[in-house]
Amino acid sequence: MESAIAREKRIKNWGRPWKLALIEKGNPRWRDLAVGLGLEPFDPTHPSS
Image (cartoon, rainbow, N blue to C red; front, side, top):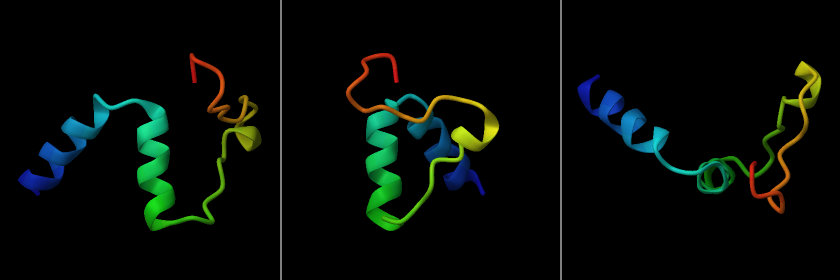
């Protein structure tokens, strides 16, 4: 459990594009659920995403 918490803390500091690449590496067919929650979908070309 300690190593999982340490990993989460490291990942928390990384940018969203890097996190998405990590997700897609292990799960290339994932869905961004933001739209279903009424949020804007992730746009990798927008600097604030």
